[in-house]
Length: 350
Image 1 (cartoon, helix red, strand yellow):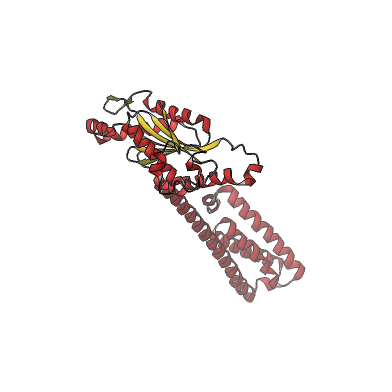
Image 2 (tube, rainbow, N blue to C red):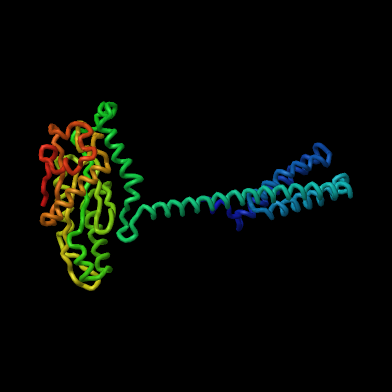
């Protein structure tokens, strides 16, 4: 982890490594001093001094410089190598080792600053991801919101239509022949009465529970969206069209199967009405009905369900051999399409 990398090692392991590096460097520098007999050879100690600062913290470069300056100097004094410990040699060594330790200090400072900036950037990115995710969710039900539809679901629908209409995908034998993207708009029946009788807090509790039941009634990779008010949009990709009514029925039953218990202990029976359609609306002309227009058609089906008894679903299915099969027939004529029995069939689902 980045945070762990920026910490200075401590304890016996750190001091053991520090002493090992400086011990090897001391022996090496003494050996080289005997071999070459020139003070300039001591420049090789720049490596361990800078390395100690880099590995063990900024101040350790100064400790290493002191260690590598003092120990060899004592040895050279007793060994009679006066050229290393005369005033000129000591002065040059002090200046040189000061520069080496300063370089180690500076490099470690740059490293720490880089790691700190990197860690802060990671934290900022994490916060941005959290904020973005929050902006795509409804705070009450924790479902996705309409913005999520605009940014992701519409793209998912476009990709699905491309898959079923592109010859290259057909060659891959993905078994998409009978698959559709089922879309449903569900609305809580008589929600205003719940608010009037139990207050807005009771209405909120009902919304949360209905959202949970709808979410439980669909698959893991299906998406449930707080569409607005007491409405929910449910998007189920890759559904066999022969199972569409079963999916709608499962959602209806999941909501009305048991009363909702509110915080005050009262029980409320809740039902929903559903308007449904699938993409592509026209299999022969996948792009004849856009994602947005299909949602509008599902909304018309929901309106009919609300007007005719509630507590059921209505699914719009286009006739492929009807006049609606002409590409572009639906443009600007959704109401006529929905009301024309030669263009589509509206199936009731209880």
